[in-house]
Length: 256
Ligand code: MF3
Ligand code: CO
Image (cartoon, rainbow, N blue to C red; front, side, top):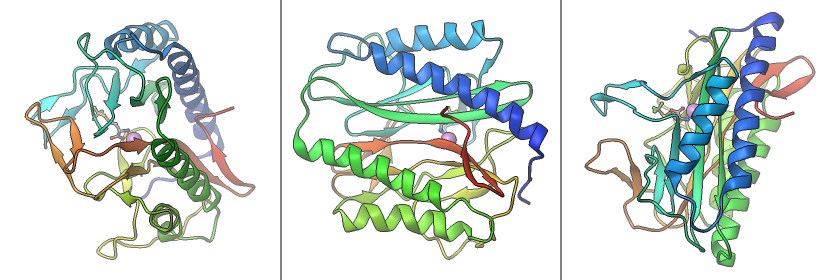
């Protein structure tokens, strides 16, 4: 069942979303050569807790991993797709890209967003990977209108990525979001015909999160049980927004 949100609920999700945005903006400004992903973690935790919110990822229980996620952020560098763990040993260097993903719970409602940030000079190919991933999210957001269907969102990501010569990850997906971080429906970055294709209605809120590989689509999870990496070792990019369907069109809750 897809839970639809009232305007007053959306206002609370908006507050959560704007906090996530502010945190990501600060972190983006800090990312440079020599900074560690643990440095980003420390800053994010303070910003979130000072705002009276709860970091949504920290303590999140995953059946697949068989453990609770221990950090506020997921910081996924280069060939890491998602769920990379902050570390004082991971020093960012020129040519790297880092996906910074975070979520908060505020007044009972969740916000979830991610950006991919380059460090120093990156190759033209890597810049294109980042651009196409961001564009695929923007195009998918445009589909978040009453009367469209879920597959319009999923298929839009897939088409933009594949026509540009990249691939979408299949093992990880976006999701409904509200009073739970993960609600129905799943939002794959491709049309999965095993799933239903519900019509989008006012008050539905989805976290759309394209995960795009430069090379082959395959992924595997490292021995830490969390970090997802590309099988071929090539780079992967990730962007995410929490987006509501409204009568006036898409409302991106995780940006101003
Ligand atoms: N944006 C991701 C998601 O929606 C991040 C979750 S990390 C976790 O699943 F630690 F909370 F699992
Ligand atoms: Co998410």
